[in-house]
Length: 94
Length: 331
Length: 86
Figure 1 (spheres, rainbow over the protein chains, first blue to last red):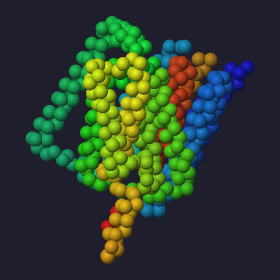
Figure 2: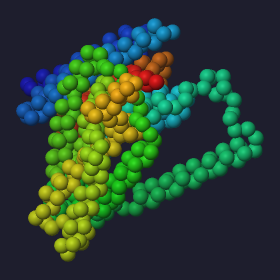
Figure 3: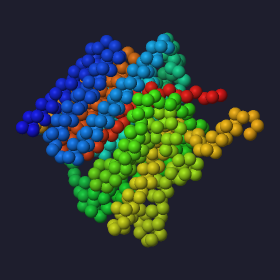
Figure 4: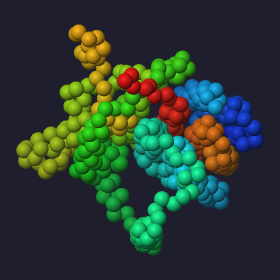
């Protein structure tokens, strides 16, 4: 039962990863690509980690996985903000 | 486990590594090359993990994927601006000298590649043997740690590590000859500042964790030092003036701590009648931890100084008073 | 179960390749940077899957390091240096 749930979560995570990277390729603009990227980062990795946490059934590993997810969340949100701000700055100059 | 799927995974990994390496060298824009090199480091860390070398993967993740981008960019900022596209098409080496030079470099690179290929062929054609891993596992219990990589680095081949730390110290001395450090960064906006507020403590904690866990699991002084350096680099990027780097005499002490403690331990053991860096078995674990702590601090200071690109400007109260005195005519 | 992990790792590898395309194509430096971010996150995911597949719990630590240092790259590229006051 747990295996089935974790399998579903992991597959859903990979789906969001692929959706995010296809969006990265097909969307026309830097800002819309940032949207696609954050879907892959947050949802994709989050579902993947949820599935792996269920699979591991070890409290320490679950906590480490949670820390990884929070770190990626914060870092990717900050990176997206910084990249978008830099792009705005360059647009104003040129 | 299906071997075909694993083979496909490995093939794709290999392809991306080679492709990224080629692209990062073939590009003309420095910033683009640095980004490609960073991506190369990321994929390489995954490759080390796939090859079951977690210690190297940790070092690659800390230095190759995180710090090297910042270090290369800090160096690239001091480069002159790239030439406009029209002038890059004109060859800069005219005439016979240019042709001879290009041929010489081509021959040298071919010779190097040929030597490497011959060495690899030799390795693959000989049968694998267990001599070295067998020797390591036979002596692991007497080394003071249970992680074989740490045992080799800090006990069996401690002399090599001492020399590596001496190389790092020489690099720092070279950095000091470059003059003043690069100018600081603008103070960070609320978003990046918020990230830095919790990231730096977590980085410091992770450094301590890696140092401690290196005795029995993948980790160690180099990886921990790189994490501490990342904390300092992040603080610098956020526009802070105080980034955890000590000043004056303390800085020189920290820079020399790695080599210094190593030499101190080695010479003390020599005086006591044991071989140079031949730890007594009961003390081995403690000595290794002490040396690793000092090495971690030295490595962190070296990497932060490399990012700063020169002598750090003084940030203490006396220095601030000195700067004010420069602006006021009568002081 | 291991089959599933391996397939997921291949899926993440495909995602990494698509990100690679964007790094090589992307007209501006911002596009390349955000593609590197995707490569980093795909790398974290792959390391997590590999740690279960190859039974190496240390790879979780590698993933943690990659996750913590993911923000440093963008900060290094977008940081504005102060000009000297002279």
